[in-house]
Amino acid sequence: MFFALSVLGAGLLTIPGTAGAQIPFFDGTLEVQATNGPDEFPVQGLAVGVTKCSPGLVLSNLTTGSDGTAGANLPADCYRAQVTTVPTGCQLDGPAYIDVDVRPQQTATAQFRLRCA
Image (cartoon, rainbow, N blue to C red):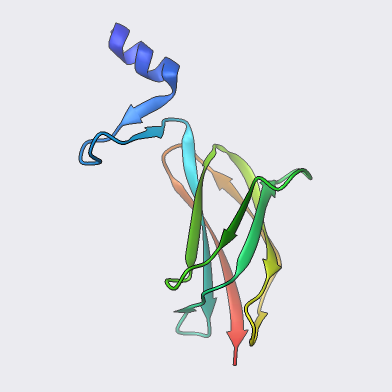
C-alpha cells in the first residue's frame, strides 16, 4: 500500500516495456496533425503554438515532421493549438486554431487540413 501511495504522490508511473522510462502519471499528450487533400497526405513544416484555452503564454512550439505530426506531453487541461506558420505552397483549409482537452495517459489530437500546390 505504501508503494502505491508513493508512486501516486510522486506523480510518476513506470510502464512495462519502456526500459524503465517514467512518464508523468497525470500528463497526457497533445498531438498536432497536418494533412493535405482528401487522401490526407502528411504535411511537413506546419508550426503551431500551444497555450491553455484561456489566453496566456505560449507553453510549447511544435512543428510537424515528415510524417505530418508533432506532439508534446502536457498536464491534463484544455489547450489551444494555434497555427503560427504554414509551409510554403500551402494554405489552411479550416480554422487557424483548435481547442483540445488533454486527459491523463491519453492522446488528444488537433488536426489541421491544408491545401498544398
